[in-house]
Image (cartoon, rainbow, N blue to C red; front, side, top):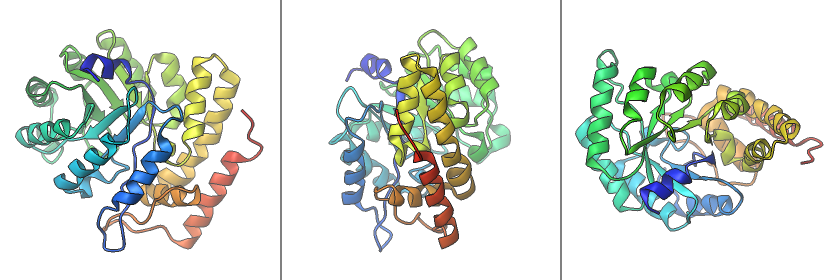
Length: 304
């Protein structure tokens, strides 16, 4: 797809796919392929490789690029392949981004540098993202996840960056609806906002968000797509009911247990999850029972 086609298709629900590991702790490419194969053709906007749920901080650059190659062979247009390429230095982010593009990335998800937090102000972030956008000819998605990065990207910084032709979207994962609304009012027309919280999904769509990147979509993609499609069809009662069912999958799985809980939920839902990469630990038996109960609750009496 051309960059313009990618931007046009950067809407809907995107699962931030997990990275399965084998018993030796290496990436299990077969299980990774199997998961992506199950996501194809069910109404998703595409997938995200090497995001937070994919344990990107614990992947080597070679692993990120190999996962990109595998995913490129399975993700077909108009579905969009987004790849996380944010590193600490501008130079290394540009280098990894170019490598990911060479292996088939349609768009790049770029976390702000965050080790020197006190120096990551608006002008610094603006210079970082502009340097990247000048160096690559693929759409860039700014990644706002302050609960992990410790960086609150100023609204005016996002608005300023949105004027660059290659900076096309914001993935906003704080769950701050007020911030989402402010961004939508300040950015250029056509700039996409994707949210990362099911709690604000419907309100964000009403405000003008283009879709969402949801951890729940890796193990309950039908519910997530159902909310988005029902909203687009103005079946708001159905959309609200499906969002209500999704909320416990956040509050009882993703929030308390993180990646380990999400991977356990995937296994219980018939996908390949497996353990997280150390130092993260798998969930215990009690947590697994709670996760199973939350999954059952989300499906009880479901008709849509």
